Image 1 (cartoon, protein in one colour):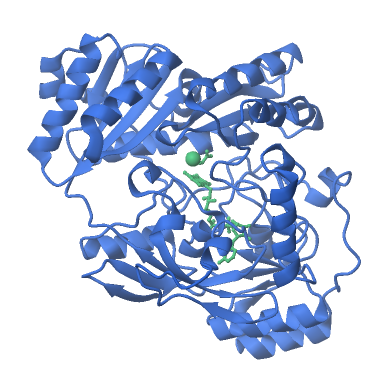
Image 2 (cartoon, protein in one colour):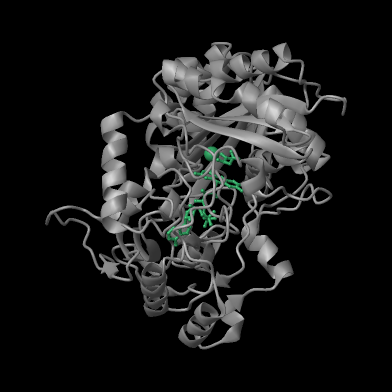
Length: 526
Ligand code: FAD
Ligand code: MLT
Ligand code: ZN
């Protein structure tokens, strides 16, 4: 176990030795050898093409070319279409023959008006980093990519309000804000690829929700095009505005089923000038919870992230990064990453060290390190942010992103592991079995677990072993089957495990009201 003196003088050799992997644009083709199967084939039992949708023809292409003015804003050759048709996990693949990349809200409006009249189905797409198969078509839907709408519109350095196009990449928005002393109130491992509009459409949670809250609170206004082409805008909304229904809240988390978000106004906090990151080894899940209670109490206003990871997630991350673990003294069952953010380094460091000293004294922490500079902090974060890629590296990953009351949270990983072992599907080392292992990690501070079942191939036997078993388990514990990733295609038949019949009816009523032809992101959860 480390001592307080060691902590204070911080021997961080292992931290420096970390592979400085940085998830800029999130890499995708980790299992490039295998072709991705068509969703329509893999899930032919769940979904059939609806003949009410028109098939694209030459007349439509001429219309779109006329609207977009430039042939470069349309993609229709097979090789280039692949990126837009396949999801990040390489689990789902659509068959779209056309990607449209408008540059203005008016162009989006013209496109939607036409598609609605013609009954052409459309899938809005941001950075295509979504993890539930929501961002790609199932059949031949047109893909409407927002990537050409990538301008910062304005920034008010007094209020901290940023207004930008939906297609601005999250990391670019944050870099812009950094230059002005502000921070985007959301951060996630896909920041180098995902869009500001995409994170609003999914209501992404990420690594610092604990500190900055959900986008339902920080997004002040949206501009969006409704399925019939109507342009809705609350982008000039004020911080306080109680005039009637707040329509933008319906769009946040609607996953491209209600409107195409084209612009975002968001309230950004001042950028912390002092951040500290500690990585700790902990001997049980019960103890992880105790460390969390202590961190909240003792670090209070400076606590900005509390992430937990199980031992197996670390083993796979180390294999993937070909690097030693940040904590070299042994293998521990659980690890915790704690971040503090504030404005006074000495004050914050003193608080963190006192907290850690107390945690050690109480026997809650077995070993740990504190980053001594920005580079080391980034290395520790990048280790944590590499878990998703490490999970998929052997061939694929079945993902379950859940909220469950904290005391039961990790029980899901154990239950899934038992179930997979009973089915004789698992071997962490041998290629003879299709499952590498079930791992757990996530945003413990938000009660959000990621159960990843890491596999060598996607196969129905694994899926049937896990579903609906996992969803039933979550329902029994009064949890949510989607904490932050959404429902998309993956959970289209499972919404009933977390929402009542009344809630589902209200969702369908809203969808039918605004999209009576059902052209926007069909075959997904609504
Ligand atoms: P896409 O993947 O393109 O689309 C996602 C959904 O939103 C689709 O249904 C699509 O139709 C819709 N959509 C996209 N743009 C628009 C638009 N402009 N208007 C209307 N609908 C739109 N998620 C988290 O919540 N927390 C995390 O910590 C997190 N970490 C991740 C780490 C990695 C490495 C990866 C690959 C993903 C991670 N994700 C995380 C998931 C993903 O990044 C988020 O869901 C993100 O918000 C998706 O944004 P995107 O721009 O890539 O959207
Ligand atoms: C994360 O917390 O790393 C993200 O939600 C992505 C993932 O779990 O794959
Ligand atoms: Zn997450």
